[in-house]
Amino acid sequence: MASRDNKKASWIGVPLYVGIAVALIAGLVYAYVQLANPAAREVIALTPEAKAYLPNLKLSGVDMKAHDSYLGQRIIDITGNITNNGTQAITSIAVICVFFDSNSLVVLRERSNVVGLKQGGLKPGETKAFRMPFDGVSENWNKEMPSLVIASIQFS
Image 1 (cartoon, rainbow, N blue to C red):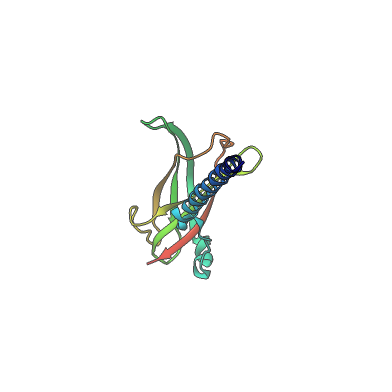
Image 2: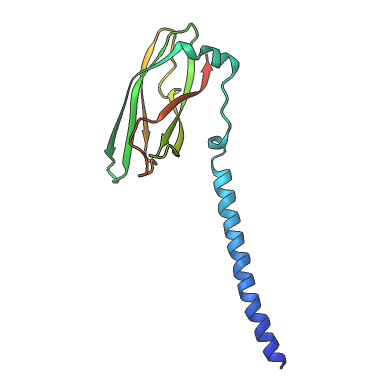
């Protein structure tokens, strides 16, 4: 009879150990996703100075094209120009691009620099071309131009 009780105990133990292992793996995956890219989770707020400067920045000639990469990925390119009609030199401008599906639900929200170290600064009165490539846009995307919102401005 003692061996029969041991078999019952071992059958109870296996699902318990599997459940603990699954919970541990799920916890590790969740922690990785939350900690892998903390900058993407930041709440982005323009400074009062940047908010006041927004009317001086103008996006123009914004266009969108899709093409396949050499690896077979679908790349969505958004190109255009940004003009600084103000009096301050700028070292960085980041834009948040929000892609929607046909039900107006967000399928991708991604931040991209249109002015930065790579592109050079933006002096008063200057216009610069920009390109923002996106390779993670869902097939559910509505194929329309995403919303473009200036998320941050850094002055020289």
